Length: 116
Image (cartoon, rainbow, N blue to C red; front, side, top):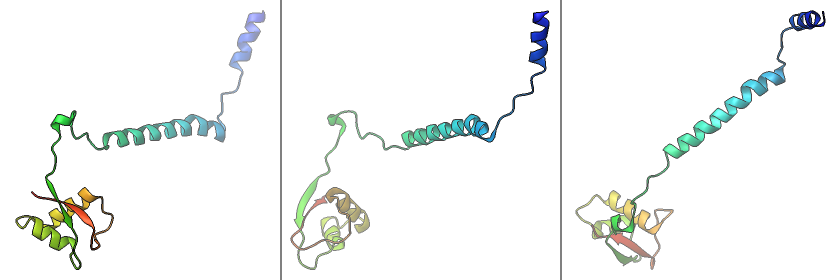
């Protein structure tokens, strides 16, 4: 008889109800974890690629050192250094080679300028 009463008690229990906090825990936390996983995966997939596996695969950009004269601009330096190339491309190379944050230069400043 004891086994029959325990079966009746299990069947007569009310259905499980989730509170607001329970829904947040069961739905919100997995969504936050999924979002973090997707963001880290996106960061991994958009990270910059390696230049080369070894130093033998790297090429050195041929440069000359130019001292900026009074009244000289990057545009003038780029035109004199590579007259056959678009000055905007040469200026972009100069800015990258010298880690310049602004487009201006000051007299006496030494710059690495690509020769090709």
